[in-house]
Image (cartoon, rainbow, N blue to C red; front, side, top):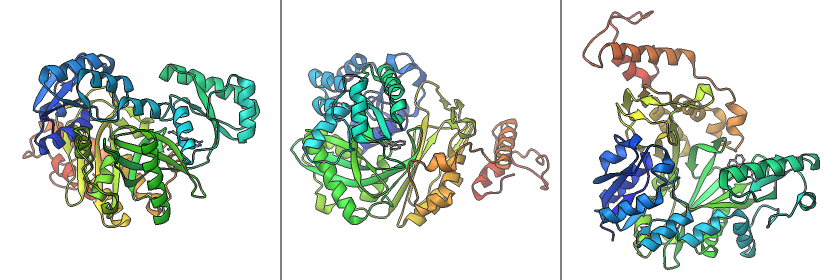
Length: 502
Ligand code: MV4
């Protein structure tokens, strides 16, 4: 087993990985940019090393600097987390060359799954269901027109180097095709430096169901069931859960076996996620492989009891999978809410600044994966994810209730967050019914605004607390309009969770 691991990431996921290392008796090295000197992951790790200026290209994406730091500090392996260098085949190859273990798939598998067209070819040959459409790039518009006619409108333009919705266009008729292709090519070129696009049949209002898979370096592959990730906004996931309400035991079995086969034919190792689209008639289609530990991995951990980060480390160290498919089962229900530093009342505008007060929820079945603390200033340079709130309960209904209560119990003051928005999503009748498709947010939460009263109450309390010099023992007199004799902002902040919002 490794003695020391460098964690090439920041925020909540770096903290998550550092904690796994500690539990396994492995020393951790955090890396940080100039904007992250005071970040939580730096405080949690056994060692920390500065790797450059705030912009990610100068720090968290600086491959040479990170590999050099690992060598200097004597780390035998690098965990990339998600984002940044996590799915970069060049980084994996450079690690391999430098004699450092990349905790993730081998560079050849990363290359294959990163190329959507090649992946589609591979999957089709293996008999894995793919969305009807092209399996190579066309030479020009005439060929695209012929292909689109064969597929039948509406079609979808997709970037071969893509993923996450970039370069995607829906095209409903031949008149729109040229503009769709050219727009997709332009976007793909600027986002990935590769303008290759292809066409697929457009599937209306699908569900996004993904399977967690683990593959060791000795040919053993297991899946750890699904995650339902349909609640998204502009390809940004907001709420994830498992099990999916859309699957029957029989469908789950078939999709799980398909997911294992996807990894097998890709020559894949370590943790991966196989994404499927599920149409209205419950046909499923392979979409892509996410070759990383995913943001939403905790819901799988809570329902299967498997620590996915520890599994990744063991696999990377060459151990044989100790898990057997027939021993794995889902128990209960888990839901995750992503807490972003964004203002949901202002079109999810990123919000930066100092966290003046943080109270994390707790209690049975409540897990908080965060990268924040009171007094920390949220930098503007990176993905605005602050933390994840994950709950587990025996049934979906009780998990919803637990999540609603935990969100009410969660206070972050000083910056705007998605917490109030998440409360409304979780309490929405359609969500409670499990009617979660990719159109859910668009259909029910367009132009959502935070409720006036609640906002004013907490802002007042915050202002009063600040005037109070953050001293909980002091009283400041009655709040404007309050019937109470004495007013304590701390009581207001404290009562926030039970809904007494003045
Ligand atoms: C699709 C689709 C409909 N038809 N492909 C979006 C991200 C990328 N991974 C694939 N995506 C989609 N591909 C066809 N042929 C609809 C989406 C899609 C979507 C997929 C998963 C989760 C949320 C989504 C939101 C909008 C569109």
